[in-house]
Length: 133
Image (cartoon, rainbow, N blue to C red):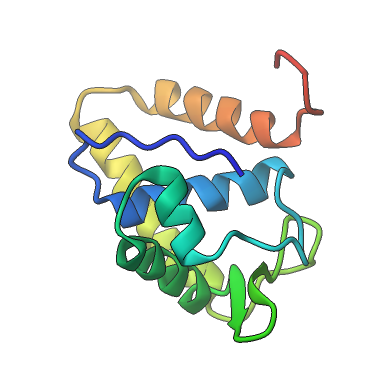
């Protein structure tokens, strides 16, 4: 698994790891049942402390994206083909979405531009791999 992090970003590294893994699931690069590297191995691969990776994995576990067990390690729990989200997800997600959209509008993007950009991102998740959409 190849993750790209921005060590100079204001976004914490654990959050970037979480975000890249969620994006890989949405893109179809990681599917339900796929094993993730151990926290130590990913820490070595990214040249960061494994506790940072552990924090990202714990966040993914609490959000229902992965399961962690001593024998199998971290495994993707659900993907875009896993069916409807669990109860409560939609309401919590909509609250976060409202804030994200508000940031864009507050920075001066028009609602139409926000909608266009959001549509482009959604289309990219549905595009077959290798597509230029």
